[in-house]
Length: 200
Image (tube, rainbow, N blue to C red):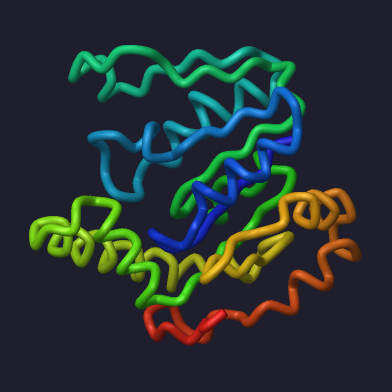
């Protein structure tokens, strides 16, 4: 099973993905930040599809080095065995329309805008430079998400602030598809990307 975990930066995607994966022995988390390293903010979907998702769909092991890894001599690879019972791919834009046919289920992590910003800037060092980069990235993110609206297609929607998730509840929602995720769908739908309407 391949699950995409999407949401704004700072929403709690990584923690949610890792918590979910921890409930399934042998599960693997793939971070789109690794695929997108030294690439465009959001134009990396072709790399994720060709390097990770399509090979897994074909039953192949993955040991993928995105092009920038070779250009900049980054060691290692993105490794995912074909036998992994659960692969959780997390990152902003991972559940975009162009990738949904390669995913079995999708999760949208909704977070309070102000809290997500506070978290993200602190995570990136809390400096003025970190805040400036955050605003640059947020402008790209908001345009992309406003056009793609991935929360509308999510199998499960989670509130990323102030707490995270009960991963077993999420697994139940994913395995139950439409009916199993009904309760989680009751979380507030974001009225707009930037307005911080979700005070959950």
